Structures are given as structure tokens and as C-alpha cells.
Length: 158
Image (cartoon, rainbow, N blue to C red; front, side, top):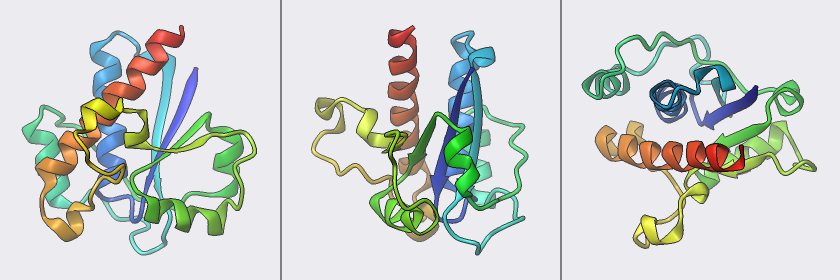
């Protein structure tokens, strides 16, 4: 079983969207049993809170109806437990370094770094935070692109 932890700032928008998008993609590919998927935050600001309502609305719009969640903060133990820690933006990476100072096993990456550069169309590797932009659809599309690429990597490595 391959264990993936998606991480963003508060764990109420992007990382939890990625968690449920990846679960949906894995299920559609018949690979649900191959993965353990979770999400977490680099901050303590939203611990215990559910998915942000607009993020949940966006997931439902894309056919993900059952997305129950309670925000939590990433821990040092997560580094040992998970095979991959996938972050949404460079800001999250800087914050993660306060909790997990180094990455000796090469487990940490940005979600969009898994996408072929020609598919990014010159965009940065950051998934913009819809909490600030209010553009949940663009965040969803970037997350979907990254999750598809991540799942393809896994399928090609099998």
C-alpha cells in the first residue's frame, strides 16, 4: 500500500480537496486498495474544522459528495509513516521545514511538480490558495491535474 499525505496551510481547502480528488481518481482506476490517502496542515489555525464550505461545494459540483473531514496539523511522525508528502505551494514547504526540518528520504514534493512541464503552460508549481483568491474552480483544476499525474506515476511504476 502506497501512503500519500497532501499538505497545505490550513487543511480546509487545497490539501483536503486533493485528498478526495485523488481518492476518486484511484477508485475510478480500480486502485483504491493500493493507497492510503490523508491530508494535513502546516499551521494550527484550522485544527478540528471541517472542509471550508466553498471547497466542499466545489467537490460536490465535481461528483465528490461524501467528503467528511476534520483539519489536523502535520507531525514529525507523518514523515516516517507516509511514503510521499505532497504540498500545494512553496509557502507550505517553508512552513513544513519548521515541523520536519529535512527530507533525507526525498518524500517531499510540490503537487504540480509531478505534472509534465508542457502540460503546465508556463504556470508556476504553486496551487493558488482559494481561501484568498476565491477561485475554487481553478484550484480544483490544478489539483486534478496534479493528482492525475501522481496517479499516472504510480501506475507506470507498477
